[in-house]
Image (cartoon, rainbow, N blue to C red; front, side, top):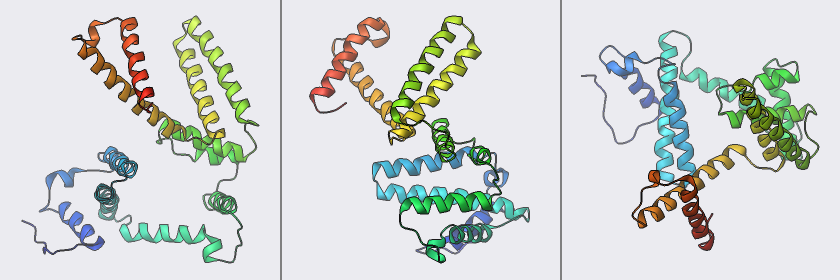
Length: 271
């Protein structure tokens, strides 16, 4: 058994020590076996759960999920400390220095008059400190591990700063029609690779349109998915009320129930 003093309240130093003990010879076999790659999916999962807590406006849940995210940070730092690479304090030092450098209007004598000025300064400083010499460098720096919609939106936004963008939302929407026509041609050809390419172009056009309309494409799709689940649930309920099973009905028959579901939510002030 590893010795550790119990107390009523713990702090970041305690968390760092707990993780060190878990990774030690007398610690937990599972924790000792983990690597950056083996737990990277858990990092994503914990971040998503924190976001869900924010969406739910659940303060207690958010506190818990932020703790799980912090554990991931400390755990990864511990792995590197064991390799004599860096430790948690080094991570804190680097982010503090970055925040100070990127906020010259707070920690320096730079004058800003709006949020736009702040963002322009931030981008300029970021480009300089990361050694990004071209606009293409800024696009390539967007993490490929981001959800595809989120990455597409960020890439489009950075291309806009280089002047490569639609003039208006109307122009962006026109591109959707154009890409849709190209997708239809690809489908008619039966070329799977071409279909995938054109479908990707259509999705990218939708993301650009969302950006021009001031809509977050990732959140819009999330809301659409939630709406679909809600309508699906009501459709299943309506089918069951007639003593039927969804999978035994034709798509035409299901469409009738789907329309009833949509009408139900519309009449009750929903979606």
